[in-house]
Length: 200
Image (tube, rainbow, N blue to C red):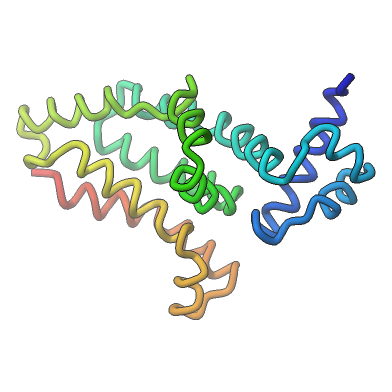
């Protein structure tokens, strides 16, 4: 019988190791050592690193996605939702920097994982937000813009710096601390950029 406290300990240890080493650099032995269990016990709970990583990812994302849906489905204006999404997404990824690259990689190469991710009850659903954008365009609050393009711009401007962090740190000569400072600044810069491009 699997013990919930042991499994929770494993997931906590795995999260720590994945944050330090990433998916490719992490080793099951390191995770077992961090969890203070033997490797055989680790494999009893999770048969391989891929399965463990997916569990860690879904655990983290299930905490984040409902918050995003709360922003999308709230009574706030489009501008406030743009600000709320940028702040929430960037804060989340600073705490879980390994997730964006893993998500993109897995969706591209692992159809089963992609299907699980997109059909999960907690997966982000921007449908109501898209409808609100269209309504505010009709009211003259926003310039004419394809709601999906607006969302794509928002997602891209928030996500790319993390997905391409190695490239960005190298070109801009940034260490981890200065990179995170720039990301904190983007919580305001990204909404300002998008809002200025769509407001009438």
